[in-house]
Image (cartoon, rainbow, N blue to C red; front, top):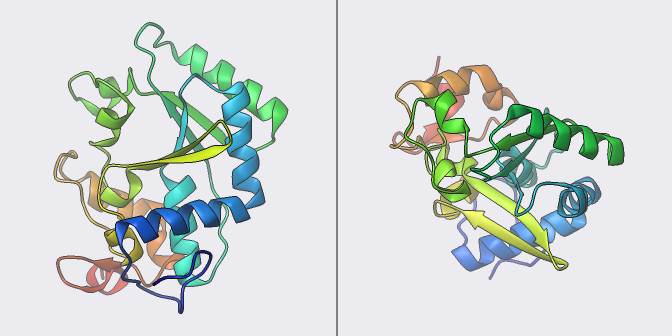
Length: 204
């Protein structure tokens, strides 16, 4: 049984889905910046907004690598088909920055299909189902003091330090992001699930 707040060792871990959810929630509660961000979005952000992608994914990678990284942005996602103006997203960003000085990035998923050349998304989870990496399709929010987790794919692959392409994503985007995001330098234990080797060894 995996301990509630820590793992027995660093590196890839085998955990059940229930254990993974419990670990992520406990790690979030122990992270002052992330809890402040969650509270800020719950109070000032769009209705039913989630904090997504690296906000959760990188926390798990950090724990499994024994490191602490800085987020280049904090992705806030929501779905509002009746107002898809980018100006509205920027207004939310300004409100959040005024309350908590973090690199907020607010995106209404009801308009993001245009950027990605997809059919219109039906919800936040539908939009996330197209994200390039399975381990990135992960979000959290604070509701009535409780953490709610939204994951589109099994969390076991995230804890195994696999970085898996999403078959629904646009071809080539996964590979481009691997090169652009610098994940391999920051998280050298990440591995290609097809080859079962560290990604750093498969790209060069």
